[in-house]
Length: 87
Image (cartoon, helix red, strand yellow):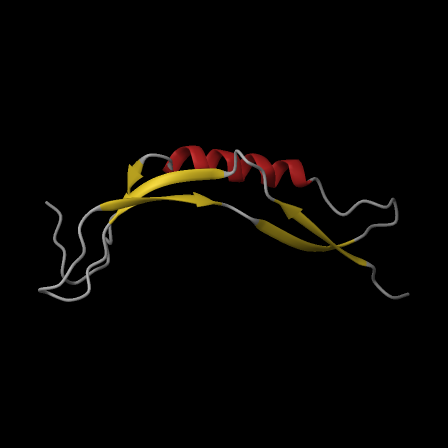
C-alpha cells in the first residue's frame, strides 16, 4: 500500500519576534547594531495514518510560540566569531 503524505503549514501572526544584531565581516569591518522583525513559517510533511490524522501539530505550534517569546526583543551575538571576544 502506497503511503499517503500531507503537508502541514504553521504560519500565525503571533509567530514572530524582533531582535537586534550586528554582523562582523572581518577584524576591522562590522556593521552597527540594528534590529529586524522576523516572521516564522514552518512546513511539515508527514504520513497520514489510518485514522486520517498525521500528528498533533499543536505540540510544535507551542514550541514555536515559546521560542519566539524567548528570543523576542533580545540582541543576537555572533559567539563563534573569531573577531569578537565577550568578557
